[in-house]
Image 1 (cartoon, helix red, strand yellow):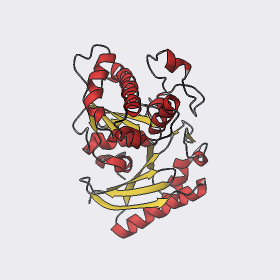
Image 2 (image 1 turned 90 degrees about the horizontal axis):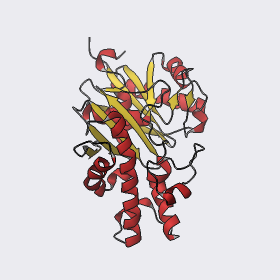
Image 3 (image 1 turned 90 degrees about the vertical axis):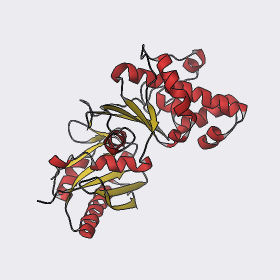
Image 4 (image 1 turned 45 degrees about the vertical axis):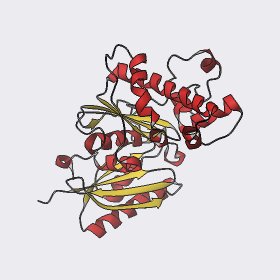
Length: 302
């Protein structure tokens, strides 16, 4: 019997991407479409993408899906910034449309799984994947399996409070869309960097411009970002002590993170006795869709 191929889908707010992988992880077929902005259209768009891929390749595959949220015990989506998915039975609707079981997970978990499987964290037993871009998310992989958790939020460090805040950070903690204040997401995302720079200087500048500038105010903003990231990652190290931390998202392109973060994380964490291994992702923005495909190990593919 010929091994099944794996199909991964990354359901984003603006685009939906499909990637088909062979048994050895080689890319067979890829396509992106704009994401429909309603639930029925999203289900129909995914079903059409899968049908197109299988028709083009002449093979049927297992299907894994990365979503911008997570699944409740009742099978509905929660915490999705693509709000038309919230409260909807996405898995059940797709299984009916595709006539097979599917697996789905948060997109940060899929990022971590991809990088643990054949990316920058390959060969490590415990991998913590960080996405720091428009927001901040995280995923945890142990022994090649994504840790989803009892409530679907395993690895979700973006909505823990900034550790060890100073007086100014406590007083000026920005509001987060989750309803709380001072989450890691509002301090350490690209949008958080832009907002912090505006608060301190009264000037507007995009995150990539701030990161690239040698100006005193821009460098001070980057110093604050690196220090805050280090405090958050120190708490992660205290809890799970990962073999490797893989950074993704736009913030991961800042070269100084890989120079400065390890020693700072060791400083803030509880007696690590050595800097943690912190590396840049290997697969870039393809990690989510690759991780979705890897939700089905080969011996479980259907």
